[in-house]
Image 1 (cartoon, one colour):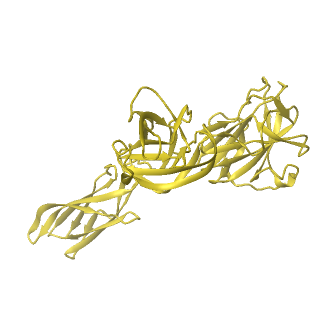
Image 2 (cartoon, helix red, strand yellow):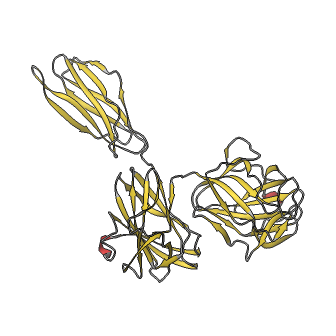
Image 3 (cartoon, helix red, strand yellow):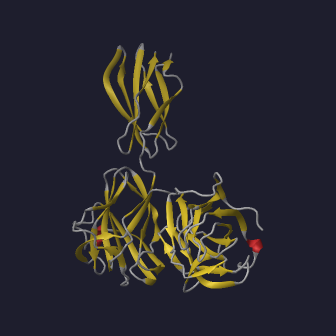
Length: 434
C-alpha cells in the first residue's frame, strides 16, 4: 500500500478529548458492517485530528485499523494498494451505539479548501454501527467547513461491499484558518433574503461567509455589502455594492455552504458593515426568529467581531420588516491582538560631523502599522527651537527613516509606532550629537 500522506506531525495518540471542532453524522445504528468507507469534503483548510465510531450488537473491547486515501473511496473499494494504513487502534468495552473515545490519528491529515479525502475503518472483530442511507456520496452532515458523505459498507478486508450506508461517526478537526464566528444554523423560518450588520471590535479582514438555503436542490443567491448599517437602506439598491452571485447544490436547512469574498473586506475597529444575502430567483434563505429583541441585537460575538440581528426581505430590495436572526458564520483573519513594536537600526546614541543625519528604524505589528510619530525640536543656527511632531509612513517591510537637520550639541528624537486601532509601541529615544 502507499506509504506517504500529507501530514502535520503530532505526537502519536491512542485516545484524546480536546480538539477545536467536531462534526457528527448519527449514532442511530440500524445496520452494521465489518468495515465502513466514506468521504469527507472541506470548504476551508483543516487538519483532521481524530475519529469516533460505535459498535452494533457487541459491548466487548476490540481494535480497528484505519486507512485513508486522497479523493473519493468510490472505485477503490477493493483496491488495497490505493489506501494508506494509519495504524491499528484499540477501543474499550462499552454499550452499543455509544461513541467510543476519540481515536487520535498518529499525524493530523491536512486538507486544502475544496479537497476530498476517503476513510476506511475496518473492525478487527465485531461490527461497526452504520445506518441505511439513500445514496453513496450524499451529504449526511455539514457545518459549513466540513461535509461528511454517505459511504459504503465493506465486508472482511477490502471485501464485498454494499452502497448507501451512513457511517456512524464523529470527526474531530482543527481549522488551519481559524477565527470563525457563527450565529446559528437552526433555521425555523425563511424568506427571499436577509439583511444584517456586523461590527468589528478590532481591525480585521473578513474573508468568507457561510449561509444555508431553506430547501435542497440547485440554488442561486446574490451577495451584497455596504459600509455602515443596513438600517435605513433596506430598499435602496444604489447604496449597496454587489459582491458576487453564488450557484450551488443545496442540502437544505442546517447544511451551510462557505463562500469566499472576491477580496478580503477590511474593517477598522468600531466599524459597522451591512450584508444582504438574497435569492433573486425566488430561492429562500434560512434564518431564525430568535427572541423578542429587535434589529441590531447582538446575536453572536467574540473578542474581535459581532453579528447583529437583521431584517427579513420578500423579493429583492423589498423590506418585509421582520427582525430575524441571520443563520450565518463569518471567517476573518488578522485580528489586532497586540501593540506594535519599534526597533531602531543601529545605536541609539549617534555622533555626526555633518549637519544632517538619517535615523532608520523598523515598526512591526500583527495587523498593520498606521504610522510612526517622530517628536523632536527644530534645529536653528544657535540651538533647538520649536517642537515638531512628524508622522512617518513605513514601507511594507516596516522600514522607516527620518532625516534630521542638526543643531549644535545634542539633538534628541523620540519615536513611537501606532497601529490601525490606535495601539502604540513603547517610546524609543535616539540622540544625535553634532
